[in-house]
Image (cartoon, rainbow, N blue to C red; front, side, top):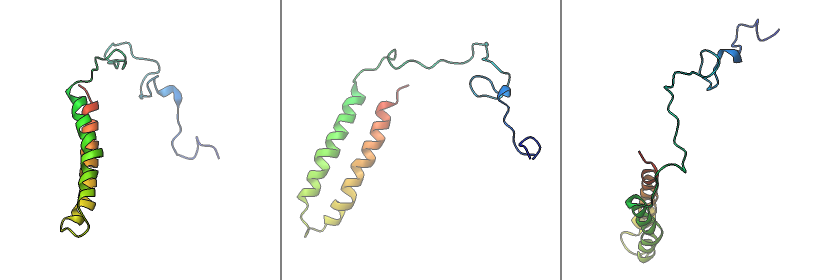
Length: 104
């Protein structure tokens, strides 16, 4: 029994073009495909987005651990300090890092 007579899918490489899209073989010459910009050619500077990310890093690695350290175990908010204070900087850092690195 071969794969051509069992009624299943048989891959035909000639049915796909160079980009992996189904259609005519070979690249399309219509000029509609947008070429991505090379990272070295993009205008990227350390601007206010970078400084915002640095501020969030300082908060995540300095302010939040200090706040956790300063809450003694007998205080009412000790459980809050151990559960929420590590979580908030982690979420804030993740969101800010994605925001700071995505550019239009």
